[in-house]
Length: 327
Image (tube, rainbow, N blue to C red; front, side, top):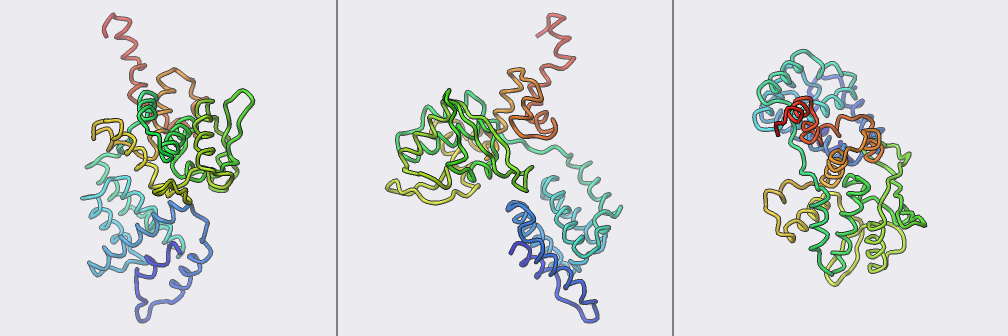
């Protein structure tokens, strides 16, 4: 269960401590099962275990923590961790403390000041995954081999790009989620996503050439129903569900097979096809509402971040330089 290990490791009840704290935390663990996405549960487990270990090494009381302890933890983690990772740690600690009715702990001015120190020193900018744009997509598809696993990889990459899918969405697709239209293109039912945790479902479009690649994989693999993309073992044995962490590994392997430099390969992630499609849309001048609909975003923040270099070329400074005849 996702919070058992770190919470149990946080603190042995001390003599004289009110036992209700442990009782309330245990109740939270029990009732929260399935309330978070798998990735959030994994992050909570990892973050709280990391925090518990840090406290144990220093003889600090982990839970409930004082603002001073959390602020010191932030300062320590900021030395070696990315700002986004440290912010996630604080979020996880906030969830744990809210379970105990102590949500003010991580909102204390001491904690906020520690975060401000980190941001002033290291900034807030996050590294962005390399965009798997159209030219890169085409190159990877062109060099893929003739084995069954290559059919799967081509179909996965094409679907991820057209549908602008996150890796968890990609590996969760069912055969029945693809609806082929009379004209040859198709639609995908994205049953659940990062922004649709309750599973209302959203529809994504895929092109006719992508549908063809998916059909080739389905027919050759013999899959009739259930999960669309699965593991492939030696001897072309089709297995079960792919772990989301396999998606970036597949993209990286395709890039290496295409002879791309390691600097490009290392920049690819499970979100690269989503990033690349957004960048291609920005470059093509597609209006923001259409991009948001395709990527199932609620606001333009991520699109602006993905396409920031392209958007800079449309800035007032860039337009003025063109008017002035400067390039």
